[in-house]
Amino acid sequence: MIDKSSNFLFGCKNLYQLSIHPFDFKKSELPEYKKLIELGKEIINTEGVQIFAEFLFEYQYRVGIWSSLIILEFGELDQNEIFEFSGTETIYSACLEKIEQNEINELSAKIIENKKSWTKKIKIDYNTLS
Image 1 (cartoon, one colour):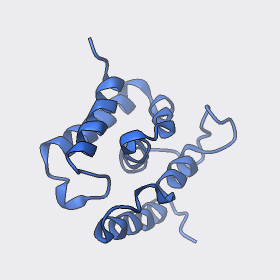
Image 2 (cartoon, rainbow, N blue to C red; image 1 turned 45 degrees about the horizontal axis):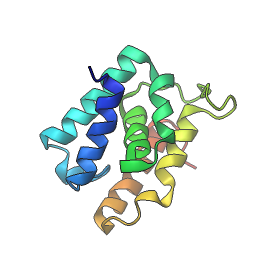
Image 3 (cartoon, one colour; image 1 turned 90 degrees about the vertical axis):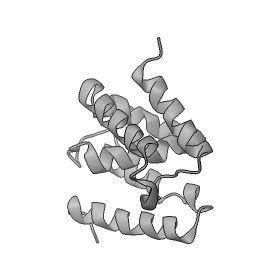
Image 4 (cartoon, rainbow, N blue to C red; image 1 turned 120 degrees about the horizontal axis):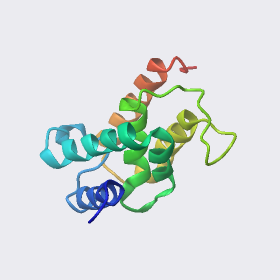
């Protein structure tokens, strides 16, 4: 039986192959997009944000980007919580760094604009906008 973590990885791969990417908000109402978000939230609720944050180290199929987006948007994260995997960096900063990388800059200008606007909103939400 495939566990939820495997389902999340396969879900990211499926979205990638369908050209559905993080911050492509015009596609956020598609069932596949919603299903991945709900699965991420479910994993956070059952396994915890620390376990889910380990997906940040996955580079294929934008898994790290998807997990960062889900953690920051839905993870009810304490911005000062240390990422146990690193021992020094916060989960918040690890997620934000992952999103701000140029990894998804090969996408359309609209998606990149969405990413920048969303990042600004998150920084406001977490009171870290400088």
